[in-house]
Amino acid sequence: MTARWTSWFATTYGSTTGSVYAKCTASSPTSFTRQVIITDGQVVTSTDPITGEPATTVNVPTNPTPSQRIDFTINHVPNGGDHGYILFNEQTLGADGYTRTLNAVHIVMEGPNAFGDLVIGQVKCGRP
Image (cartoon, rainbow, N blue to C red; front, side):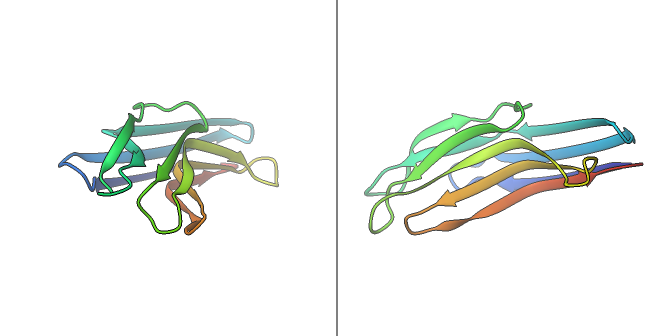
């Protein structure tokens, strides 16, 4: 069993278009391969408090390590800066002990104004 998901997106700042690719393959009940590819990925890790423009950025590796984390702050929102983190190549094991979930990108907003989760590129695989 193989599951794949691909997404293309345009950045807010600049003209770069990147892509997210996630693949999970189960070849037996205990044998899995997982792959995440990020093309032209960049995270704005802080913004200018006055203009909202990017102040600092981090380039995302093409093949991020499992659960690679990048923290960020949005400094120009009212009542202080919102913050959160992005996990790349997030891998979890299901309660059944066999099913795997692979999130290519998992964005977590931790407040104080915005809270929530956004997953881009989720695939699941299990027993073939």
